[in-house]
Image (cartoon, rainbow, N blue to C red; front, side, top):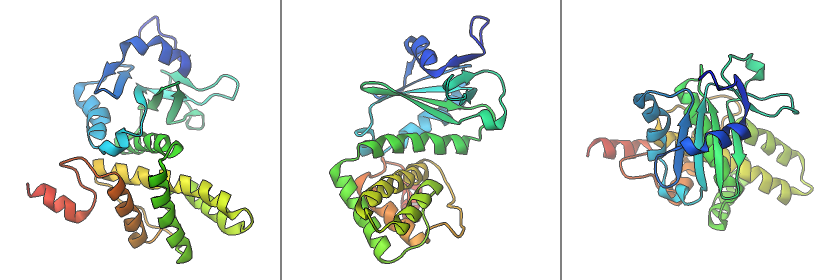
Length: 248
């Protein structure tokens, strides 16, 4: 942090101040780090996760500016989210924040004291959220069809906490079921797409537990996303693909 940089700055002001210092990664993604990062860290934070994105996913995204900063102060509702160069109490921190533009989006990520695996999850979760906001009818119909099959089979569990909570609300509310189902479906898609994208980039384990969906149904969802959003060359999702990629 330079002597001229305040210790805290609203995210909107930060994005505006440093927009002319964005470094392009490709035609769609650019980034700015404050403080600056070694090239090896930039590779881990940006080059590798972006290289693992399926082309069909990139087509669904607007132009994305990534801001890597030390901390994000979630504020108290009046001050708004702020970039912070000072350490914060855990309760005051948020790992990500999104500033939506007309035809672009700026994604903020707190990197101080964050594990790279947690950052990768947050990165893909933000992108999955962007895709879920405007998912095409083909994607929506395919994924909702998978979910209808799960509900008919009374499959327990979910991919993540948000979709788990919405699934319970769906099961408790037979009235207005279709509306609640579509809301649940969008969240389940976002959570599953996060897992799928993270799995293309990194070797991850799915945590087991009473709320976790049985692995064969997780596989069915991932297969549906694999057909819609094939991974780029040299990347794999399933064990049999990993063996083929390793054998090249």
